[in-house]
Every structure is written in structure tokens, then in C-alpha cells.
Amino acid sequence: MMKLYHCTGARSLRAVWMLEELGLDYELAVLPFPPRVFMKEYLGVNPLGTIPFLVDGDARMTESSAICHYLGATYGDGSLIVKPGEPDYASYLNWMFYSDATATFPQTIVLRYTELEPPERRLPQAAEDYGKWFKGRLRLIDAQLESSDYLCGNRFTAADIAVGYALYLAARLKLDGALKPQTRAWYERITARDAFKRADARR
Ligand SMILES: N[C@@H](CCC(=O)N[C@@H](CS)C(=O)NCC(=O)O)C(=O)O
Image (tube, rainbow, N blue to C red; front, side, top):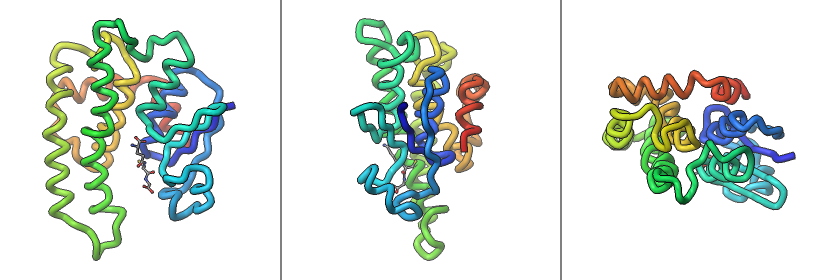
């Protein structure tokens, strides 16, 4: 059975959500955060010390959005991914990379310098600047959702999971105060799904 290493509320939630959407059997190891510090033996499993980490047969994966695509492409009927040849394939790929590199990255700076570092190492200026950066990068989502209910493919896909997690983290960091109505409605739509609720409850 495949095994996913997870920390509550972290990016590994993307992978748990996808597993739940697909209705797959999996073993979930919920680790203390950060495992690099509180479960040093985990470095023997994943040398990066980060989560998620997926083990599926010989496959080993450390990137949450890539795991979502892998699961959707390997299992199920493929409707949760967008394939080459479909009109929105380029858009789908773009959202998958945007989800972590553009939408989540600036938030990790905010998280680090407001919560994770000890008080004497906190950097309010960095947190403020990267919070603004994140908010600016929501423009692509706002524009897309003006004319559709989902990010691409005219259906719910792994792109909604991958980008949706960035909004989940934004809510936790209180960076979601001024979301455009269509973006808030989309976030509420995707997180109303039973699979999201089951995934978020796994802790
Ligand atoms: N790009 C990776 C990032 C993985 C990552 O950095 N995960 C964070 C949690 S959200 C982590 O494990 N941080 C703990 C650490 O860096 O030690 C992904 O999308 O999964």
C-alpha cells in the first residue's frame, strides 16, 4: 500500500486531498512539524526532511503538486488531471507550477518570519513585503475565475487542489482578508467537497 508522510495543515494536505478525491487506500504517517527537528530519523526516509513524502512501489516523491498529478495520472479515470491534447493542458501545467513556486513560496517567508523563528530572529519587514507579494500574485486566479467556476478544463482538477492549498495557507496567515468575490466563492466551492473535509480531518 502506498504511504504518505504528512504534517497537519502543511503542503502535504494537497496529496491527502487528492488521495481522498480518488478514493485510494493509503497509509498516512502524521509527523510533528518540522520533522527535521522533532523526528530526526525521518531524514533517513526523506533526506530533505520535508513533507510531503510519497512512497508508492519504487516511486519516491517530495513535491506536493507533482504528487497530485502523479496520482491523478496513474490512478482513477484521469478526469482530475488535464492531459496533453486537451485544450487547457498548457493552462493546467501552468497552474500546477504556479501553485507552489508563485502562490505558496512567498507565504513560507511570512510563516517563517512571523511564527517559526524565535522572537529575536523575526523579521516584520520581510513578512509584510512577502505578504504583499502573495496578494499581488492572486491576480492570475482572480482573472481566471471571472469567467469560470474552476481554474482549468471546465471541471474540478488537481490544479484546484494545488492552488486551493495556497488559499488555505493564506487563511491561516490572515492574508485572505481582501479576496475578490469570485476567488472566495471558488475557495468555498472546492473546500465544500467531502474529500477536502476528510483530508483536513486527518491529523
Ligand atoms: N515544494 C515542496 C515543498 C515542501 C516543503 O518545504 N514542505 C514544508 C512544509 S509545508 C516542510 O516540510 N518544511 C519543513 C522543513 O523545511 O524542514 C512541495 O510542494 O511539497
